[in-house]
Image (cartoon, rainbow, N blue to C red):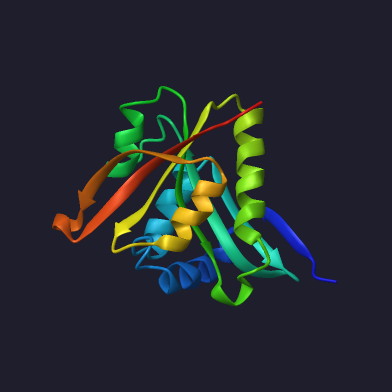
Length: 166
């Protein structure tokens, strides 16, 4: 039987998180150890998901007023007084099919409910397209509320929001 757990990420998880992020960098953004530490200090949710005690994925999410300088976060901050922004979620390709992303998002929605947060926000690439992310977020009720170009027009993202239902 496979042992799957979600827990707060610790300093000893940094190398695994950075390796996972590097595999998915075309869909997230580059991150080194210093950037990870910065994001961890702002994060409301800084989680890893493990499979048999090995880090198989991670999630970083920030609340409003986190002090996060990011154009996507700023888009949501201008529209929602209270929100939880998913900065990144990455699952190791070798663990696809175990529904690890689903488990992380179910836990994230539970956390948002417990904190009285009415909306979850995120973005995913539409140029270049990230079709798996679009399908994943559709299943959780996310809907596009805007788009914006990033990286000097090399990338375009769909800005998404989902209500947190009681």
